[in-house]
Amino acid sequence: MSTDFGPVLDRQNATHVKDMPPLVVTTTGIPTEEHVEVPPTPEKRSHRTLWISLALVAVIALAAGVIAYVFSNPAPVPTGRMGLSDSAWSEYRAGERMVGLMPVATTAAADWQTYRAGER
Picture 1 (tube, one colour):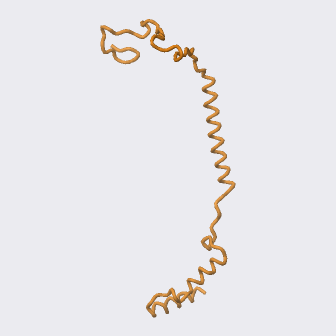
Picture 2 (picture 1 turned 90 degrees about the vertical axis):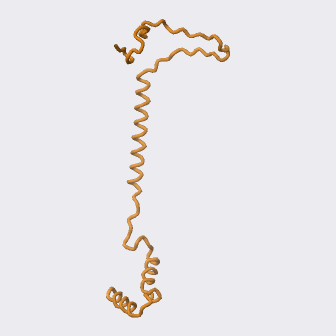
């Protein structure tokens, strides 16, 4: 045997909720200044739906704003000079041609200069 709330563990003392007496709220033992009687306020479905829809609109607006910002400010396109200015690029290229950075072996240095001469 089971009820709406699951199986009945004690079948002899089983009582359904609808068969129980109504709940009576007592204020015994609560100081009067601390006891606040708040009437129950049922939450209206329309208010909940309104707040949920407002939250969804806000999230969509935020996402649209972020997307618009990203597309209106694209990242700079890198150039063939690795993002360096003209003067920095020429200094970089001049450093490639320096003899001081050549390998120690003389044959390797000569081969390197011959190889680099073909690029010019």
